[in-house]
Length: 314
Ligand code: 5GP
Ligand code: MN
Image (tube, helix red, strand yellow):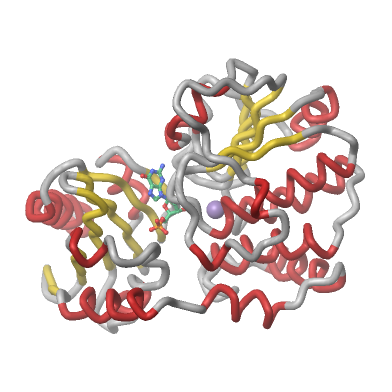
């Protein structure tokens, strides 16, 4: 059921012990929005605990209060009267779903989120969930401390490719500006986020070496096998290196995270890749989407290239 931001704030005000979560394979927006909301709730005297059922890439570990994020252990239960799900629909929470039966409040900006079975505040034009959490702070009368601002700015920066992508609006920059006023240091955050391990740069090199072009050079793809992918923790930004090819409309990266578990990232300049991803069991935004294909790498490539081919022909 769709609700307003005001109604979302009322639900939060009425809750006493809150579990906060976001999607597996968490990005800067997932981690930034959960950490910011946790600090806001704590400042209002509401106990709040973040659970994320995945590892988090190293660049995000320096965010304020990162060490308070927990990963659920097998069979664990958590006593809460509200679960807040940020930056995703409820199908990408891993074992966090099993921690509590508390009602779910879902706050998100993905076009593919239909809000089935939950109370959902979705703002599809918001560049990042962090942009929505910024507005939520106003509804809750929570002060944006420098630490909270740092977390929110990180989500804005990562989801907009540092304010370059088409989701960057005047409102996005107005929020970023306000966050800088609240104490954010943009260059510090950029330096944290751009830092890569040697293995990651070698991984990028391997990915670029795998470049293949399809459909008259309109589609560019890269593949990372498990042996290479397991040596580093993030492929963030890899796909942007081929998205820029002048003839390319759709770019993809397939990463074999484990045998028969291939993660797919897609970016586009026009085609709605969220529809392609949704057809393959995933989702996302018009120009940035993803899914998981539980097949071999070769099979994943065949399935994906065919699905993209169908979309660009229509
Ligand atoms: P990325 O390629 O950066 O992993 O993801 C691009 C966008 O698509 C992000 O907004 C991400 O949350 C979304 N996305 C990626 N994979 C999936 C998926 O398996 N399911 C859904 N629903 N969204 C996804
Ligand atoms: Mn996001």
